[in-house]
Length: 359
Image 1: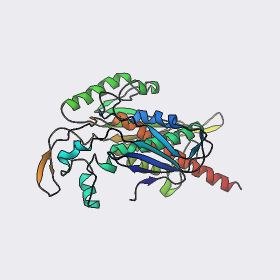
Image 2: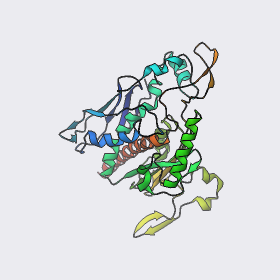
Image 3: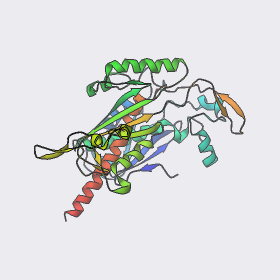
Image 4: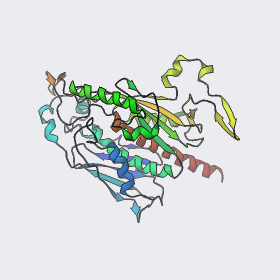
């Protein structure tokens, strides 16, 4: 089925279903001789895995990763890297009561119409569980990028209308919602718990900063770095909006206010501000790349909703089971992973192009 692979020189192809035997990813383009073992990948998967806290799904998957190929004696070989994560606590029986009903907000109806068949066990390929494979791939990309001093940090900027006013990056992993503002985190948690008690769900905004990106990543017209990032981030099922730098606020200010003036700082050309979010003409400027994604509320809620069944009969549905009332905290490492995949892909293309042009 097309649509399962992403990337050009650093490419990933995910496989598996939510309640199947497991999920995984095959990665091509991993540079050789990079120190890598399961622990490097597991650290990222532990940030995404279910059952982390009282405000996430109680599904308790350990998400233990297994490296099947591409590593020898602790080093990447440069060949295809295959990673597998077994599903240990799947409960497809939870979906039996409404397997013939189309859940509002889910891909049930469109998968049914497109393929004439669908995996009703937790959405199959359309499940958010697929993102564990992306996080595994992103962990590999982040390991390579770290050797280039490129660091990607995402966090919950806003949840259910409660917005972080402070950005202390050292606080992100110290609270359940991964907010850089410990005070705002308390309000975010309260809103999530309130929604869960009402059988509902909430969304939010994830902000990402990419530091250490060199000038020149991205290519003209169709492969601009922001265009490729948009492709990667909008492929995450819960993401419904994206902006860079000033983003939508740029539509409300003058050009003289938006333009980032160039300055010379210790012999290096920089910009005095970063309203463009570190990208000019689709090419990285050397400033921090700054972006935000809007994350919708999870579709699986226990409140009664109107729907139809596979025969077109109107009915109601209540989705019970192990679901998140807010996926913003768990989507943070997914966003980081997809950004890492894009940045490494663009970096490899940049290096290949420069190596060729200097000959």
